[in-house]
Image 1 (tube, rainbow, N blue to C red):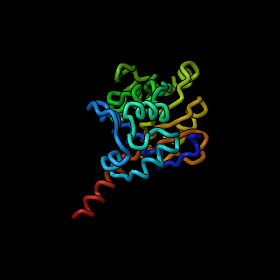
Image 2 (cartoon, helix red, strand yellow; image 1 turned 90 degrees about the vertical axis):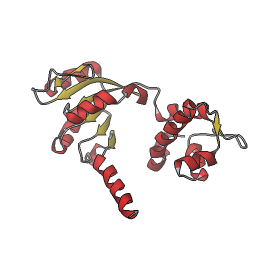
Image 3 (cartoon, rainbow, N blue to C red; image 1 turned 90 degrees about the horizontal axis):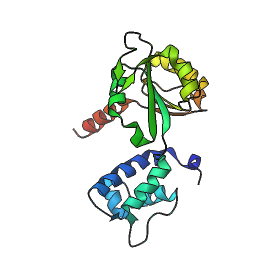
Image 4 (cartoon, rainbow, N blue to C red; image 1 turned 180 degrees about the vertical axis):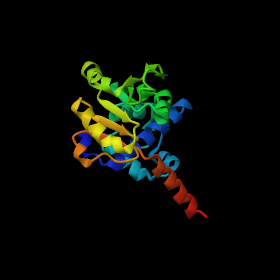
Length: 210
């Protein structure tokens, strides 16, 4: 089945399944039923079966799911076996944290370089990479051919920068610029990350529970 036919809600649940299965595997557990999995993840067994059935038949009636086998299948489905070349644009505080703390290789990516517009930052070393000036980006992209850009830049610069990066061959964005990239960029894949949204959801749930 083509991944493009899978709903976004299903796609967003796949990492939760993979993360939880990884924890179970570390504990030495060999199998789990959809009911057990649902209880742990606060979902329904039917929902989990429907999600996984989008990609094939993985469980056995009366046995459940083999944890290691299902985890391997999810790695393939999510694309974690690949090493998509990536760059970080923006070497401020957030860019530094992402470069130093995200294991890109574990998630199917390979970080190639870090760029910034501030010449006072360029030349500094972050996570083993020397920060390069944005003016060097075109030559770098022609040589290294990155496919993904992590945007850690101000919102007002994100759209123009993204359009420039697309012209240099970038096909996907992990966008931390505090704003959504324009829908005209639908020729590429965009994952907009809004940390404030997550904090507001926490605030809402706490307010509800008062």
